[in-house]
Image (tube, rainbow, N blue to C red):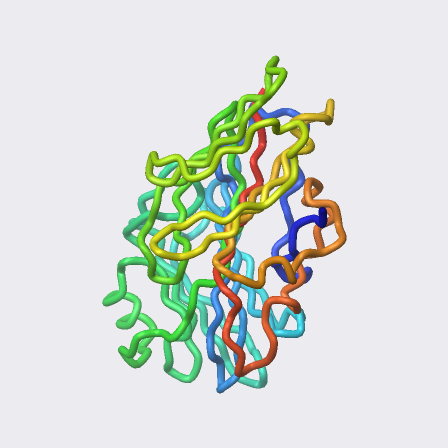
Length: 299
């Protein structure tokens, strides 16, 4: 069986390098969201990464083209000792791009993503290319952008989750779709025949028995009337002595199998994250929404 498809640009976000100790990890300390947008008539990918470490919350915004080339990137350092609002100007395709953010009133859950009380806006030629957050009125007033809805589409998300046998997160399986509680349960400690369970809003949608023989695989579930292909690789949990991670992918695309790459899934440091297979040209539509979870077991 082939390993997971690559889904993020190699010039985009790099996977964090964790130490062998799990005690210092913060649940969901890295979340990456990718949006497909139109910039001067061209299709562009805007990657937003929310991070959390001992220094505080961090934010990174990058803009890529469809040939896997990073056009520009701005890193906003952890704001424990810095401003929680501001702006930066960049240049893409000979055009000025302005990035505005205000997280001074943001409220956070256990992860690095703000839940409410914030905005993040990307503006070009007085047009709001991408707008995140619930402070929309404040964003348009600050940026001076024309109050027209953005045409951005949420196409992918990557997240780090941690737990002992239960791993939980919020999942949205399509752009503007409802938010669901997603739970992965797998107890591999001292069990001869471990089992993998996946629940959506407390309902069991998938069960894998004889996991030692089926440590990699795929299965289709239905969520919101959509066929969601689930891929899993728990080899590191079962057979590696060193602390490792499992990887799960949820993809709302019938062509998911065509995107599989040859690199091993369980090592996030070697995953190429190529977007070139996901998007065709500037006029193509995205192949679907992808959610990738890196699940790390706490000691």
